[in-house]
Image 1: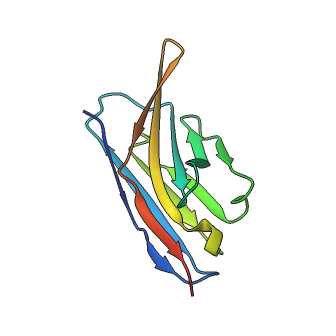
Image 2: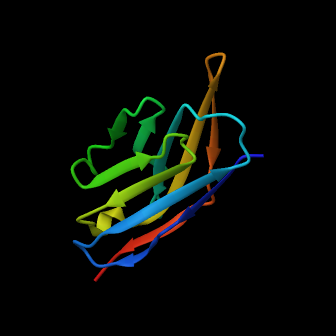
Length: 119
């Protein structure tokens, strides 16, 4: 059974940095993509960043130039380097892993980790 475990969250002041990490275990296949989503209080979960097996990365406009997603070759570990953090980045961040079988995407999720940006 696939398990995703996030680490690295916490409290940081505006302008500071944090690095989230997500380790995958229990899979005998390579994911098609890894990503990060976030959910702020009272809001829907939203896309933050993703990276394909081929190494192409995508970012939400709100984080472009500040966040960087990376993964190891096997896509077992994905990281999100977050710089110049803003109060509006405060949210629970969820790790995602996607596997496409016969055109159907199967998503796996971590339990979420809190990131709080506040002075």
